[in-house]
Image (cartoon, rainbow, N blue to C red; front, side):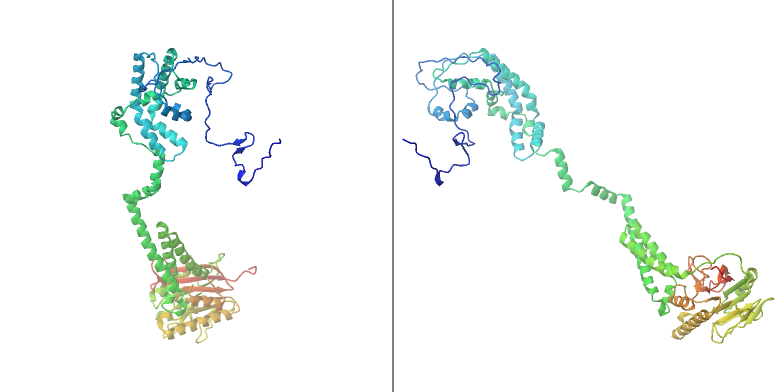
Length: 568
């Protein structure tokens, strides 16, 4: 009869753990395997090693009558390893009482008591280290390496007592080999192999289990109160650093509380206050200076741009000391704006070279006879040939020997100018126009002007503007070399002076240093130049200033003029 063909349907599908080579499912749980009666080999022993001699079990045919078993002693108490290796036999052992063993030969009591006392003493010392620290460490999930290191640090007694336990175990094994194993009356070969497995164990559990509760209660208080360190020292330091202030913050806080820190804080506060004040002043007056075309007082504020530049510079330095970078940059910008207005209006300096014989002088004596005498004396030393005197006194009508008055001043007109000469100079002034003087050959024209001040009201302001415009037009109409001198009453960077340079097509002569020609108003450090000299198509070899006059800080200007070189 043919064998039926096995057909697998949807309900008979094989699971994922089915192994076709074994013909069954492969599962992870252990399967109970019946122990054989053959001699069990050590799994760590090689097949090439000589087998250890095993005593042939003694088989007894007769079975002893069933009697109540005696309580197990410490020496023959079954190990927990036996129950774990043969789980299938536990129900039978629990149901059937053990047969009464035959009387066995007791080992030497002295050796056994000595071993037990040593192990009990070691167990007292290591009880806390074996129980509490291990449980405390295992409660937290830590890295294996860190847990191992912490456990080794916390339980040093285990590593110290390991050699002693090994010696005790070896002594017990030697005694067990000398004393024959007890023979059970009705035991199978499988049950007789259990004591042999206990003898081959590395660590004997019996002495450790014999420590009772009373012995544990008698442990020293130092071991009972030993704290369990669940976190290593480096980890605790890292946690404290992250939660608390950093070292740099602590140093800064300590520095602020120290005398040096308080002094630096006061210096920083003073620098901040000074920088704020200076910056506010510089910014305010700089904005007012741009309103100079409106006249007084804005043109007067514009005349002191040098001071607003210095205020901005001082504010920037103060903010740099106080570490205010943004305000330092703002102060620098304010100072830069003022410099952009001032520097282009200063003009050009003298060209140098051979001293020319054509020397022209300008002075505002403000009606002072002594100032006039001083100017005439300086003109003699400078070898000047033409002197233009503003606000001349009555004594100018009687000049010293060698000087001629080619144009008399109008004492009723404050803008009138007197002209003194020695040489070939002549007056070419037109009524209502600026003062003009030319050489006899007509190759050089000198124009002098004294516009009224800007603070005299609207009518005076209109007259001032009209006179400046006429002087610029006259300078622009001249075909040959021309020079314009006068007291303009404003700084060279004023808006009115910028228009004058543009329409007259003239260039300012920077005489007397970096600031300019002469000084009419001064605050001590830097004066404001109101007396100016402008030229066109003429070379200025030298420009010199006289001494201070007793008329508001004015000084005389001495221009050394020469014709331009053909190459230029």
